[in-house]
Amino acid sequence: GRKRLRASTFSHRYSHDKMELSAGFDQEATAVLMARYAVWKTESSDQGDVLKWLDKMLIQVVTEFAEFRKNDASSFRLASQFCIFPQFMYHLRRRGLLQTFNASPDETAYYRAVLMREGVMNSLVMIQPALLEYTFEEGPPK
Image (tube, rainbow, N blue to C red; front, side, top):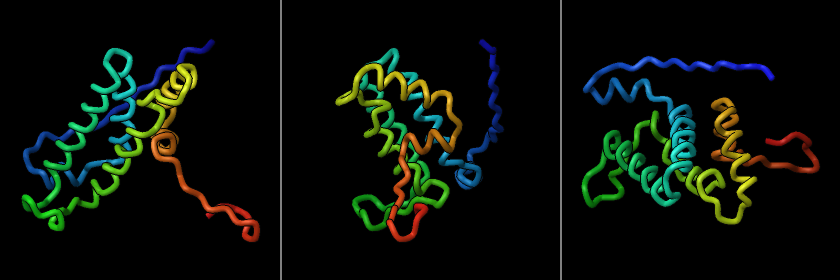
């Protein structure tokens, strides 16, 4: 076999300004990072605890960066940098990556291993599959 060393780097600004922090937020990379960390947590924690942790993290992000008035659902606004992050977390909770119901242990382990090895774009497809439309008349998917 071959030995592969993978390294990731990121920059982190230390700031208390929410606007400055939200300007550099990458929701796709964050969704994959959360998915990988949640999969890692499932090895040592109960599945229900991991799902609660995931919910708690989503609530913290939305509470910190959304604009809303208490008891007024129509006033809820989420910045464009965060708009599909909750959608990714929704699909992550319902995929076979964290919930083992209706899947064999081998299948679950396989998908978890693949998630840990794939890049961001392929991992996002695993979290939230793309919906493609096929027609007999037009050929390639839209």
